[in-house]
Length: 481
Image 1 (spheres, rainbow, N blue to C red):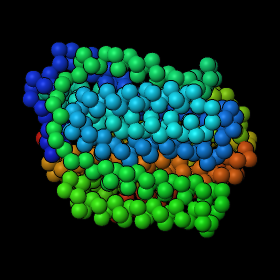
Image 2: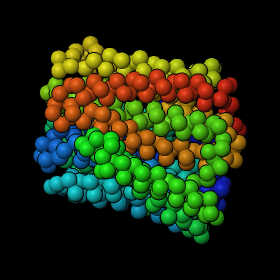
Image 3: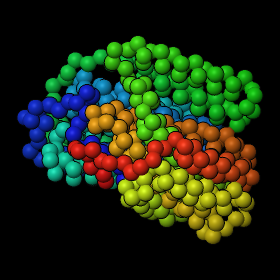
């Protein structure tokens, strides 16, 4: 998947350390191990999707818990990512990488050993915490530890990880679940994490800790606010939209977001600079990232459950069904990165969302006997193709259309909404499809994909107004991959 990266670090948040602190004698090996660790983090966004039915059968999990198995990880990953970046500044990126990797590896073991919902959700939550610590710190090391053309190449490799991890996750999840069992979608992280923990201390450049204020209240408010939002959305599928169990958490999330805004405005070093939301390109990028990720991750979730729960597909066969979908997503991203420079952000975003809506239409009439290879796979592939183009447009618009000195701030905001979008999308679509997931019928899934088609079409109309005209110009010091 294409991304736009700064090739000069944001000095307001990740100032480069002196050359002797950032240099390493084996930069290639360092990059390889960091990318391997990052690949694990991205993989775990989607690797569980195909394993969900087997988890549900073994641990007696209901729809609500299955939804949280997916969203607990992405919620903590996205909600705490900005705090993780600040911790890297305060403690040193090398220490934060190792701490995050250790937490993620241990949490993967806990998830695999789970004997019930509490232990599994605890493991997934801690995986998200570890990912939020490790990912921004690792990217900081890649950004400041390589120079000139080597930095461009390193960031290109890093960008490729983001595009392939999610796609490979579905296929790998199917192979592992059909082979040694669903627990191995978590166990596989343990030897990889242990290897990285053994190798990295000798490779990581040592940078001194820098005194920094940490906006812990802001991070907790943002994360709990989103958690309350997701809880309310999920409960609505069981108790109805007008029930107290759904309405109170939704109102609570609004209250928490309001307090978050107040705290950020008064903080000397806010977690999220709210002035970013006065920049139209950033607002447009956040909107596109939120909606595209919400739809894409939700489609992966719904399709996996439908194929196994309604159609009786094996996990491996389900994973193979997603192979052309993964290829289509990558192709869409590649084409989107080219179209943005030729026809502009607005046209690319509108076209991508329109294609996503059109691809979803065949999925709105799903039945227990619908042709998987005649309707489901083509529909998913076309929709994913369009969403892949939108994801690239979101990043490009937010970063290339703001001032160079603000690109780091904009990047942090957009990346946060990438993970949070997946959490919200799965929660909403799971609620719409509640009857189908609970009873193994196709009707609920049809309703959810109808909602998705309408949401994509509506997003295309919003993009027509919100996304700025013109072709983004990549500022000096930035490179598109």
